[in-house]
Image 1 (cartoon, rainbow over the protein chains, first blue to last red):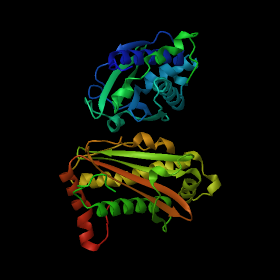
Image 2: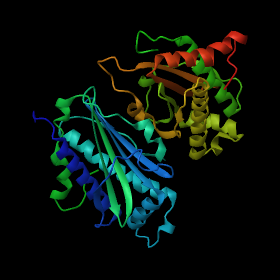
Image 3: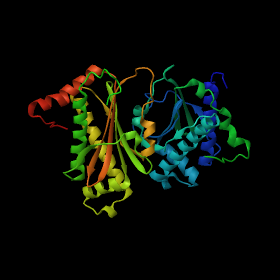
Image 4: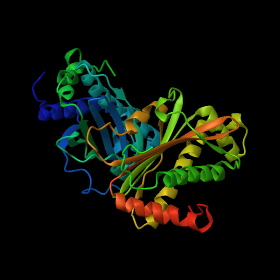
Length: 196
Length: 199
């Protein structure tokens, strides 16, 4: 517990849990995880949407964002709802689908904090326009706070949801206690997600 | 109200400007003329359970700010009903959300205008709506080092016992540019006729 946090392992665990939860949430096992380039600046954010959620404790603040075009999120949502056409999906259903995905992932991270002995709070998920990411940006720094980020894509038949996570670490000792095993907990029993 | 000792600008001018701006926007938006500004209890110590929070962000290279409006549904329904010319009980949650978000947009838009008037390009977010207890996620983390210059203020807009609580939070990264904003946008006007007369 006193060792430095293995951020590569943390990233791998979070990517893994995001993939598993999206597969369950969208009811489609063929979703794949892909590397993403730096999110902002390289893609046109106009026309995109952003869902975000926060987990906060005295030691660490986490924000998770899902960036998507309506067409792509419609596709994922149609799979989840068992529709045979994306045309049947409403904007409200898409918002609910993505917000719930954010909630599922942030819930897993909150659980890992709690199992490590750190109490934390989780926000409601929000949806806003894509270009508003600038108001939630945190620059990467080594200290005060240390800022750790990761970006990846979840892709289903060429439809992509872009994920980004940011950790602001204000207390490294506490952050090091984060229980990475918590991310795999749902796989151990019966393959079902049985918490959050 | 500033969390730093060396603020380098006239806090009282900024405080008056923000409060007056929020009041004038609410008067126009709600069609109620005799709304009063009152001191609020400590914004963070209010019972947030059952409250809602609308917030909006403005950002430039010199200053970042967020403007928040925290409220109970019943209080905001009252203002919304006045604005829509409806009975209190006829107002829907959607009506209330739209009313308060638009109010935040009007208030933050006026501040953005003042930044632009001083030559700073700025961005404004869409207003967001969430539960009151989520205010904690939009506060900066307490710092041991100096960090950016910070100014914040909280006040109530009150009419007939109904209250909307406003909060503004500035993070100032370029003190000189910010001083210029205060002088250009808010100081010059007051010199003319004693009133803040634009936005």
